[in-house]
Each structure stands twice: as structure tokens, then as C-alpha cells.
Amino acid sequence: MKTKRHAKILELVQEHNIDTQEELLKLLKNEGFDVTQATVSRDIKELRLIKSLAKDGRYKYSTGKNEAIDISAKFFTLFSDSVLSIDFAGNMVAVKCMNGMAQGICAALDAMHWEGIVGTLAGDDTIFIIARTENNAISLVTEFKRLLLSK
Image (tube, rainbow, N blue to C red; front, side, top):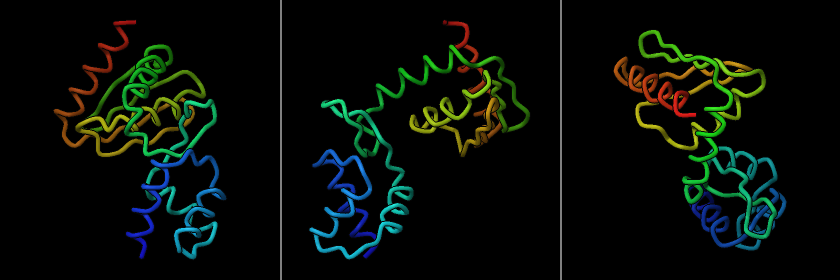
């Protein structure tokens, strides 16, 4: 049932500009899914739905995949304007940022599905990245430093 519900949610967010959980809940119920607000909230989290700007200026739920170019541009701008230093140890990369910027940069990085990254963790001013291998970490640091030099 969960798999069918997730498939229906993905279908609904592609067909409609859904901007609230309540609206998604109502559409699911219209489709015959008897779910609660808590279930919808968990589904949104599990499906990694994000809010993105719709053409009408309102925010809507989306998978984020169609906005890859926009996210990429935002990431590069945020990254080059806010990162102070980058270093690595083994397969871990540490990115020091201006205060308050790490979470936004990290969210944009996650949305890009960068190859070689296993996972990320952001605090207020630091992002930790676990790379698959030490070579992946070296490649990330090299690419990130290139981004900083290009600003």
C-alpha cells in the first residue's frame, strides 16, 4: 500500500501545484487513500519532496529533479559567495562557511546528487561530507577549490 501511495503522491505533485500537506492529503483521499496528516508528512520526507517556486509565483511540492539546472546555479552562487575553506582527511571533506550558510549550501549540494558523495551533515558554519573513497574526496576538494577560484 505504501508503494502505491508513494507512486500516487509523485504523480499528484507532477500534475498539480500542491503547496500544502493538507492539499496533498485531500487529493490522496479523493484518490481512495485513507491516510493521516502524519503519514503524509512522513511520505513527503521519505520521497525527499522539496518546495520549489511554481510559474505562478507560489511554492509547490516537487521532486526537485526538473529544477536541476536552477539548483546547480544556486549552489555555485551560494558556494562561491559563502565558503571560506575546504580540507579533507581520508574520505571526509570539511567545508567551512560563513556563519549560517552551511545548511543552505548543503541542501543545494544534496539536491545535485554529486557523484562520489555518500552523505552530508551541515551545522551552522561547517559541512562534513563523507565521500565514497579517498580519491572521491580529493576530487571533490579539487573541484570545490576550483569553484572558489572562479568567483
